[in-house]
Image (cartoon, rainbow, N blue to C red; front, top):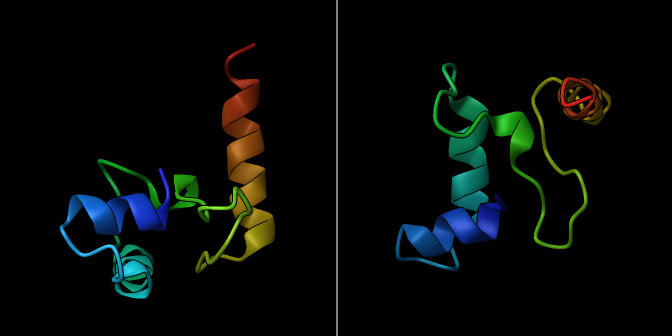
Length: 66
């Protein structure tokens, strides 16, 4: 999932920054955990706990598939 895709799903493709901000303030990420949301170019962007922690969580989850 990307911030852009979420904005499009909400009916406002230009609201990428608002979507990212809302994701960042969400304290209980149940449907789409905010560490799983990436930039539309595939890069890891914006995470309140730091990009290094976002990468760690994604790597940890990827390892659970093995």
